Length: 168
Image (cartoon, rainbow, N blue to C red; front, top):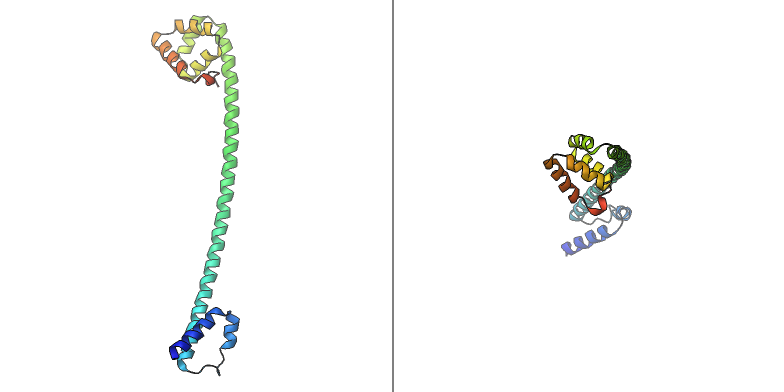
């Protein structure tokens, strides 16, 4: 009987709000030492749960703060990435204009002189110059290049996708 009464008291106290539980614990209502011990134990557990909840709330606030900081840094990184992409696009456009102008200069040179200069250029730059000039002129320049270099440039030219043959 004592076990059932104890269980009933514990269940009742667990289900009621802490303020009501404090009101229920009255010295006159406690009939035995065992009930008093159980009530004190429940109060201790309730206090521990309150402390744990406070710690969890604090931890949750810390995590939310960290999450906000991470989101802020990610947004800043995305802005930097976008800015860098714009700068790279502008650089590519400017480089494309320069290569186009350089192609016009090479086109006005004699094929022999253009071949001597192209021979010493970076492969990608040489290909882009040849892409930007008239095909007939490019063929004459390739004719004056060392056969190995002409073959290498021709092979690289054929590997460029059709929609990308505009150079930069």
